[in-house]
Amino acid sequence: MTEILRILEQMYPNPKTALNHDSPFQLLVATILSAQCTDERVNMITPQLFAAYPDAYALADATPDQVAELIKTAGLWQAKSKNLVAAAKILVEKHGGEVPSTREELEQLPGVGRKTANVVLANAFNIPAIAVDTHVFRVANRLGLAQGTTPLAVEKQLMEVIPQEKWRDAHHWLIYHGRQICHARKPNCEECPLKDHCQYYQELRTDSQKDD
Image: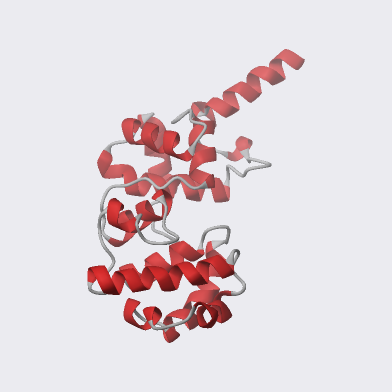
């Protein structure tokens, strides 16, 4: 376990979110947009969106239709436009236009679930959290860091085996590894520096030896 984390840290130094943002508000918006959408696509959408609506007050005054025009290339854009405006209104009415820094308050915002809340906590406020997306879920299970059938189960297991001060970075390490090497359909196991410590790879080798 310790060796896996050490190797990941060497492979992916100074990790950070791929979502471009200059404030907690912008990160919240970008993360809501990233559901069923690539970070690259979100980063193409947000410059124009943030220029039109730079803060919660501006976004709260918009209509969902106005926002929709700017985010139509994102998946689920109709629901997201409604959620973004509704979330902005709550930020203005309950939080003085600022993004709250607790999971409970974040999850009360439309379009914000546990994963999005964890992303904002870790990256906007440097509060230890592990957001489990598809990459984290897949890689953690393959490596044997977790054995969960749901994102919440994987998150809880990762929190138990990874030191709290490394939660934020480990989240990014697993995402990077999933994007660059441990792909969903064709993981590049032979080139992976973690293969000697990987449960998935060891099982593949065992199955291969049985077939020989």
